[in-house]
Amino acid sequence: MTPPSETDTDDELAKELAAAEVDAPAPAEGDADADAMAAEWEAMLGGADDDDDDGFGGMGGGESTRVLNQDEIDSLLGFDEAGDEGSDRAGIQAILNSALVSYERLPMLEVVFDRLVRMMTTSLRNFTSDNVEVSLDDILSQRFGDYLNSIPLPAMLTVFKAEEWDNFGLMTVDSSMIYSIVDVLLGGRRGTAAMRVEGRPYTTIERTLVERMIHVVLADLSAAFDPLSPVTFRFDRLETNPRFATISQPSNAAIVARLRIDMEDRGGRLEILIPFATLEPVRELLLQMFMGEKFGRDSIWETHLAEEMWFTEVGLEAVLDTQTMPLSRVLNMKVGSKFLLNATPESPVILRCGDQPMFVGKMGRRGSNIAIRVDHRRRQEN
Image (cartoon, rainbow, N blue to C red; front, side):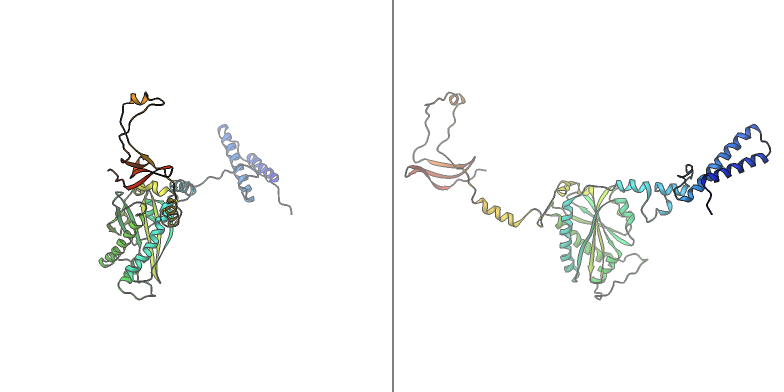
């Protein structure tokens, strides 16, 4: 059986509408136009619904007249209230938000955090007397407000100050790391996971032990920045509520470094947030490209340069005497003009390298050449 074509369907619909108009009582003149318009709209909607079945949204027959409801509009614009809590925005709002988080890359900052990882591995091993492995998971740019909203609670947030840069930073220690460090420092068994007791505030002992670890990390962070720019990171306060750890405007950009600390079967995460405003004094230094492991010092090239400098040729000038005379006399000098030097064969001669006096000696003769015997080194005048 052959399915009816689209033309047959339209013809049947037109016949039904004509029959309905014959059977219906004659309307008034004003109502006739309204009924005709309504019938036309009904026919268009019916055709669109039939065409939607082919998967092309009404492209085969008439134009699609489907209207978006309010929920679909909110989802398209990214204002879906149901997805605001704990999830990223979607739609146009997501495009706008992602465009605001694109910031310049700081190559030297990656070198600083790599150095921090190596130093923390050693210092935390000495601090906990345990086998500690520190790894850098990621370095990313994020807005400060988005970072505060993404912190999994409970956690400890440390506010520290960069003394030389006169600004603040933030360090977050998650609950797994807190209980792990407390368990290790208080003599917990190795090979067993740290016990977590949720739903209660942190005790004074836990806060004190975590604060000691934070002081160790801040000291390593200061040492990691020392070859680039000397800075002292000072512990300011310890918070458990992100609202009390606000150190910047929510829309301001920040660098977030996520560190993973493993102590056999225990461990956790530690995150360091430094706003771009804090790094502004050393921004030019962080933008430079770097290759190597010693912050610009390569021992091989340093040794090679020191050896090659001994073979560098420099020019020395022997100054017999200096005189001060009027410029008019100098300009009147001609070929054959003579002037007397206040020097005798026994007068000392100064050897200069450029404008710098180097040695003092006496003039003599060696064979057919005039020679100068160096008596002593000339002291530099301050």
